Every structure is written in C-alpha cells, then in structure tokens.
Image (cartoon, rainbow, N blue to C red; front, side):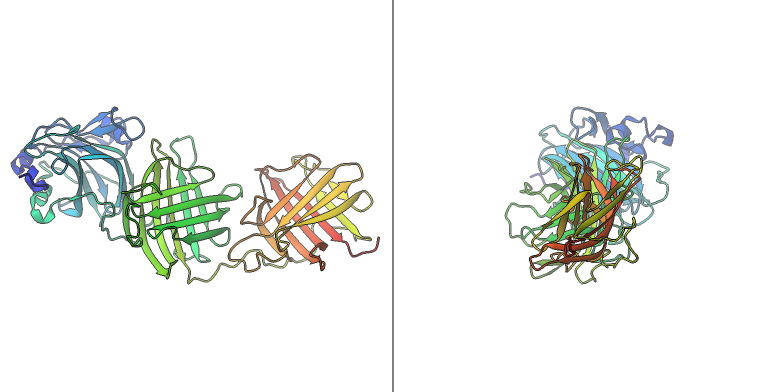
Amino acid sequence: MKKRSISSVLNPILFFSLMSFAHLSAAQFANNPLNIALDNSTVEIITADDADFFAQTNVTNFDGDAVQSGDIGNGEVSTLATFVNGGDRVSFDWRVSSEAGFDELVFIVADVNLNLVAAPVAIDGEVNWRTRSLTIPGSGPRILVWGYVKDGSVSSGSDAGWVDNLRVNTSGGEISNPIDEAPVLSPIINLLLDDTNADQSDPVNPPVELDPTIITPAIPNSFDGKYYLAIQTIPDDSNQVQRDYIYTQVNSNSAIGSGFSESIDIRVDGAGLVGGPLDTEDWNWQMSLPRQGQNQGRLTPGLYDNATRFPFNDTTNGLSFSGLGRGCNTLSGSFRIFEIEYTGDEITRLLADFEQRCTGSNRREVGSIDFNASRADAVFPTREIPQGTPSPTLPELQSNGGILIVEGTDTTFIVGSEGLSLDNTNSSFTTSRSGASNTGITVTIQLNSGSQYSLDLTRPSFEIDPEREQPLSIGTYLMATRAPFNRPLAGLDFSGNGRGCGSLRGSFRIFDIEFDTDGELSKLLADFQQFCGSNTESINGSIHLDFTLAN
C-alpha cells in the first residue's frame, strides 16, 4: 500500500545523479524568465531536476505569470531553489494539483552546511493558491527549495505544482549563492529520507516559535500610552507612494476585543498618516481561527498562515483588514501573535502583526500592534490651559453679542487678504450646541448685508479623555479636523459666504467659556487656525461672545 511520506516517493540514487544546478549571474536576474514569473528580480533562481520549473501564464495568482513544475514521470522530481539570509522575512504563494496523499509540492529551508533549519512542509491534492510567510531561522546564508515530488505510480489532476509572488524583506547583508560545487541537494534529501524528518503537510497554524523582536512594521521599545499601532499600505504600482500610519492614544481612539470566541477584533479611528495632511482615518483588523466548528478556544501565540477573508474562513485561518472605504472581496495573508493575555473575556495584552493581499492585486497591507492595558494612559495633548490673549487681537466687547476678527491671505479660500471684522454694529451672533453634554458648539454670524458665516468647535472623543462627555472647556485643542466628521479628534470648521473646506486641519484655543443654567452658551473667548485641504497658508481668527451684557 502507498504511504504518504517523502521517504516513500524519492529515490536517493536519482537525486545524487540529478542535482546539478545551472547558475545565473546577478546581471541576468531581472531579465530571467523565472525571476519575472516569481515577481522578484533581486534573488538568484536555480533549477535542477528531471524537468525544470518553467515560467508560464496559464495558472497564476496575480500579475499574469507564475512558475510551474516540469513534466516528470513516476519516481521523479522537479526542483526550484534560491538563496536568502537568516532573519529575512520570506513570503510566497504556492498551489498544487496532484494525487492526494502521495504526490506533493514540498518546501524546505537549509543552512550553508545543507542541514535543515526548519521542518519541511508540503501540500498535495487539489490546493488552490495559498500564501506562506515565515522569518528564516538563525543567521547566515540559507537555501530555499521547492520540489514537486512524484511517487512510484499513479497521476492525478494537473500533476504539477506552482510558485508565485516570491517576496524577500532582507534583514541586512548581501544575498549570495553560498554553494560553489554540485551536487548540492543530496544532504538535504538524505535528511528528508530520514523518517524522523519526514515532511508534514502545510498546517493551518504551524507550531512556530516567534521572535518578538522581529515584528513588521517595527514598533519602538518605548512609547506614550497603552498602545502603538503601525500600518503600511504598499501599492502595486511603482508610480504610487507607500503610505505609513502610526496611531497611539495621543492621536487616535482604539477598541480591542473578541468578536467571537476564536477571533480578535481591532478598530482604530484617528489621524495617523505620517508626513501627510492631517485627516481622520478608520481601520478594522480581524484575526481568527477557522470558523468551522466554533468554540475551539482562543487564539494563542504562533504563526497563522494561509489565511483567507474573515468571516468566510470556514476551514482556514481568517484575516480581514479594511479602511478608508476599501477592503478585499477575497484575500490571502498571514498573521503572527507574539504575546496575548486575557483577563476574563477582555484582552489585556496583545503583540501581533499581519500581512494581507487582495486576490488579483500586488497591493499589500502590513500592520503591527503593541497593546498593554497595564500601561499608563498617554498624556492628553489638549489639556494645556492657553496663555496670553487670543490672536488676532480683539477690541473690547461693549454690549451683548459678539466680535469676530478673521485674517487671511491672497491664497486662503474663505477669506482673502482683506479678512473679516464683524461685531454688533454690522452682524448678529447666535449659537447652538451639539452633543448631550455640550461637547460642541456652533456660532452663526448673520451679516446685515445678508451674508452668513459659521464657526464650529467640538471637543475630541478620545476614550482616554475622562472628560470627553463633558461640556467644551478651557484648553488647547490640537489636531482638529473638519466638524462634524472629526471623531475621534477635535472638530473645527469655519465657513461662510458660500465657501468652505472639503477637508481641513487646524487647532483652536478656548480662553474662557461658560454655559447658563439651561445649558446654553453664555460666554466664549477663543481663537483658531484653519488650513483648507493641502493649503500651506491658514485662516486665523479670534472670537469673543458675551450674552450676559446689557444691550
């Protein structure tokens, strides 16, 4: 009877006679068909087998091409290999159509002495495209080998294996071929032929010991607050720009919990775009065990590979990352949990990262989170009491009503260089409130000429702010975005005369504010700075309201 083991399907004499590699010079990598099909021009690809792996365009995962094992007979093997360094982060897509349980696509990693440094894995039968990601163990040169291996009889399916989208994030140092003489794979095959090192099928959750110092994107050793969340969106077009986002308690509001017994849900709202215009973003990140047969326990530390879209992951690990109105209909990816702790049903510690790619696209998202509920809250940036007086300078308010002074430049949209000077002689001032606890206010200024302006000021809704459901109060409000679309940041919006900002960033300071017994605004002394869109010049205004004075 056939036995599912590489030891039953490989002939050692065959390998000793066939392991003669064809080497390629570095200058040929970019134009080599195998490199092109694997979407990687930076590593040396070599083949040695009964029939070489070859580039083709019939069965692919993305970008229109992939490599396929050669046409081999029973008891033969088709092999593909490359070289990386220990510590590199490697990811690739693979697929197989074979006699289930017997003919396999195998992946192994060996060191420069041709000793296995990771347990070999294999896929067999009818397995659609999967993504395998791993950090190469140890240090120094490493050899990666893919082999489509047939046993002594019977063929099924397409009788082939495929590899696509090979990605290598090097940990440093030049990658070079460490092998000078052939045959080169005989010692590796001898290890595989040893029953104690027989292959394992590619598991949903491989038992991998993870190094918490190797996390992508990197997380600093220390930071202010309970969490640090880093996200990178890596485009599929060289003409597009990679976007980097960093969120802490200072610029965001995050919720971390368990939506199902076998999953983790992370939501963050904030303004984290590095080096870009300040605006609010929202992201959702879910990780899960297979959904088929729930109540299988909680996620624990380990590598969760071959993930598909949550919550449609009946038999695979689940992953879903979406935001800014974008997401994947179908996807592939992986996630790693380095540390996780629960107190009851509450997650109190999480150190994890992920990589996701939408099917049919080379665009990728990667992210990492370091959350610890025992850390102190971040120092909230808007509690500083403003010093001095509002700018621009305001004249004294003589009677019930208000004064508004606004300065601009020739390039500011809502007011130009002539600015605005409005008071009780040419305008009327009314106010309204927003939020159950006066978390925001709107000041409407109606000019005698018929024009109208409005100013919205809203406090942020950070979870770390214990006063977020209290009335707007004296303080400095940084990182303001357009109200009322500002959650969780402070909100600001000055508009009028038919003009306003589609998006904005700015800040405001409240020097004095009071509400009457009915909760209506009675006094306000404040100033603000507002940038429309990507404009580098700002509108600057000051306002003084007092509805307790005599007319």
